[in-house]
Length: 435
Ligand code: 5CA
Image (cartoon, rainbow, N blue to C red; front, side):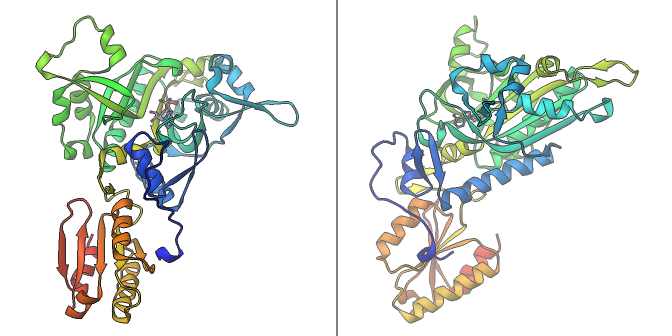
């Protein structure tokens, strides 16, 4: 993509209304733009990152055996009356009526809808177990939307729902999602701590939250220091034994920790840090199948209400969490897996024919090789180009200036380490196309 044709409204000034670093950087780097309180437009660069995160989440859901579908954002109040949650949900639910005076709502979550869809299709034990998921916008009329997309009113969520014949089946589905979550967050370059959680309005008896440790997190956590020793590799290849090990280690939100009569962790191993909740999973049994009349035939001709779980990931919130975990004083430092482009190609002198033709040729070859490249071909000062590239945080910068071109070299800079290396254009291409 040529920057001269792109839409990248970056700003030097720190926006006055942003309190935390991820919100400031998202506005400054032209990733998002607020359109109403807690509601954001995703500008081209931010949208690319959102899609990359969504894709990693999707791949790990698919690997876990979950099946993707897409449910609508607008739901009918009648559906929610079946579970009794229409009145219980409170002012966070955005309610409205259509032209026929039918009561509607913008979905804050989808337990009711998926239960109704499954109820109308599933007949027998052969239809179970199943886990279905979608990645869809939600609306919650938060009292205090803040920190940009971190606590928005409209936000993108991955929500999965499992249906099992019995409690043992539900436990297996819950564990499969748990594993998928550990792998997902590891692939996103994040260390996420699983925390035993109260279930709240979703209901049920088993629940975990996944928190990215960050000073700006909204939750206060207490946990066993041993959780910090879990390696990236271990999380990438997580399995049932990883869960067993992790869930044995103490981790609680402050409110819950205060209720614990005797903390099982010795004082020297007890850590207190803040966390950003990026995922939340629940096993709630028959709460919705019972209230909404979902039952299937068993092998011996009886009937059973499926045991269910629901599993959320804050896809849009993850952008904020990743930036909180990965930035420096110059701007964002995207992990390779989610970066909007892999390479930023900088032409230092667009009016120098040799420099421009070297850049054009590098750009064509990178594109040809499928290396996503943002090509700064604008007529701007070098200093401004460097500042923009550092701010938007692409993993590699390929810098081409007239003096270097004369000597047959270009410069390759690693955004994370700041390391710069002079090499021939061919060698730079080889480095960037090899992965
Ligand atoms: N039905 C369940 C699981 S599918 C559910 O709704 N769980 S939740 O309420 O915990 O939301 C799931 C995830 O969505 C949270 O862990 C969080 O990462 C994200 N999320 C929740 N509210 C917001 C918000 N206002 N802004 C951005 N992300 C949010």
